[in-house]
Amino acid sequence: MSVVTGTNWNAYDASTMTAREIYGRTLAALAEQDDRIVGITADLEKTTAIKYFADMFPDRFYNVGIAEQNMFGIAAGLAKAGLIPFASTMAVFASLRAAEQVRTDIAYQNLPVKIIATHAGISFGHAGTTHHCTEDFAVMRAIPNMTVICPADGIETSKAVQACVNTPDPVYIRIGRGFEPPCYESDDYEYEIGRAITMREGTDLTIICCGIAVLQAINAAKTLEESDGLSVGVVNMHTIKPIDREAVLRAVNDTRRILTIEEHNVLGGLGDAVASVIAESGKGCMFKKHGLEDIFVTIGYAEDLYAHYQLDANGIVDKVREMMGMEYEEDENWDDD
Image (tube, rainbow, N blue to C red; front, side, top):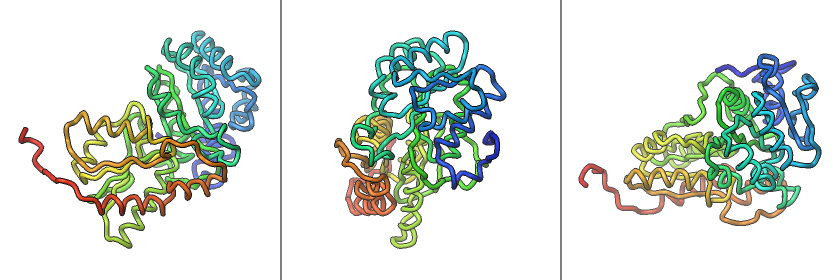
């Protein structure tokens, strides 16, 4: 799938654009091809970058004011009328303030509302704990019919937005706030909802990650190869639900050591989803979750917070070294039961 290009941009401008901007421009370009697409926001037109759509299609755009719960009810009504609503707001408002409306108005009826949740994780760190969102994976994973996606960068955000248009179910796409560097050099790769992407092969340990952690994990793997002689695989699990079970079990078979990295509470997120797959498989491995350790994050700029909570490449290097220094009982024969 090629990235849809909108007015005055292409995928190779990703290094100068936020994921939000690429989302907004992608949506506008898609709407030129599909008049079922409508946009809706709760007074965050510029903040969430849906303004690119609003500028091109003012008759298909609705700003409901500071009323997120009402916004999702309206989005459900638009979907019932045969439209494809893209509802844009901050992640903390979408997953917490309006959780009941998302669950009951949208997911319960299994409507094709696409929720684009910006400023997720701790990307809006300096705005304070009330604007951090480190619980959304757990909330959205627990809602039936909901697909949960966390793209690695702007290019993958564009691919996720394109891929979700014709899915009949509700979709939650989580993106950040800032100018995170691109993870992919181009859009020349296959993207499919629910299918993980192997960024690096490895034989010693596999990092399964999503969002901003993907690039950091790749950089950590390169460092570990050069400094420690370790072969570390990196799997981009961009879809948290439905999770790619085959990719998880392949990593277990290949390395027997699994480290998950996420910009989310370690409870209820990617790590728990991966752990469930491993536990249900009956296969043994060394496993560790790394993320935010069931805390409210302190206030600070995102880059400083990533370093403080060891979500950057240096922190991931340390976590891998800790795991490689641990002993575990290794039994290669899984067919003896």
